[in-house]
Length: 447
Ligand code: SAH
Ligand code: SF4
Ligand code: F3S
Image (cartoon, rainbow, N blue to C red):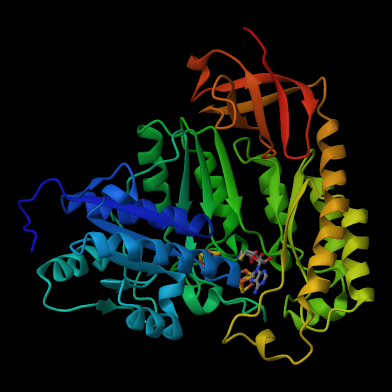
């Protein structure tokens, strides 16, 4: 048994899934450090390995199960290694059952009780109970003031709300993250001010559907008002936000994006599918005509805006005609970028119970076809920047080429460029020499 005085306890966190999970990992790290743990250089050196998992698609779950298998071998060699399992997968009863049978996991915690992790770890260390399981089926009140170990450098994620009420028929998130609830504007502003004090220049406001921010708060408020408040914070340079549900994007919000200097010209508004029949079956609450009109308004009201999206192919019952409607939308709208997915049935969701599931081969074929078209459109959109100067917030050395720097434009394009290393953390102008599908290449403009 280890004791509290053992100051060399090391943790390692394996993070899967979306930005919410990345942000949660920062809290998990903060909590563990407060309990005396330090970060291990690798999972092999850790005394405690935490899985922060995602269940949005089968492929995400399979990655986790694969890694659990590896950790099982590690644990055989080092029986005192503790393994914690949290995140969206932990919210699902069938996953917990499977884990209970697997014998690798010592602690299971959910998305609603991160703040309890230190107590659960202590319990596991005491070794009386195994596994220690504490997963809340529903969210409690929002817990403010938790420690966080930020890892994003000049850029930081800030939760503005949790959960989702939309119940898109394919999606597991409302089941794993619970009902929608918003943080108070004052708590968000305090957090952003504090981040700016620590050197942060860009925040990304996070929510499954940021456009419905503020509902249920006393007094009630909305996302546009929050953007105006955050825009006033001195020292902050850029504000991003994700995700926008197309149904809830108002004209007032678009004019606010246009008028607030710090709010970047980028809207991620997942279309999911181009066929009205499929959109209805997905329970998305809008039509293709509505979405086309919305994109038109976005481009009219917010000059230079980048519009990005998520698309799913092979939703149950999707015919060739339906799929052609998606392709048609992609060609008409010309998204700056799109994340594309094959539909993955999630047990417990409405769509998983539909009988007309699309064969895997068809989904694969449609995904390839969609990507080919979208990648060309993205490349052409990027080519518009060749020869131009763009403002880049420099994150640091490029991972693929450490002698170069990397950062993003206001429209969220990744730029890899030549420049002095001391530009890291600063806003600089970069002259674009060459456009690729996913990046712009160039060099910093001197002076
Ligand atoms: N709240 C965000 C993100 C949800 S998850 C939103 O509403 O857009 C991110 C993306 O994963 C979704 O936009 C959707 O395109 C995709 N996705 C969700 N469930 C899926 C499933 N069962 N199969 C395939 N893709 C899925
Ligand atoms: Fe899932 Fe829909 Fe909620 Fe997004 S809006 S998290 S896709 S249920
Ligand atoms: Fe995010 Fe995956 Fe959960 S996408 S909300 S971590 S299911």
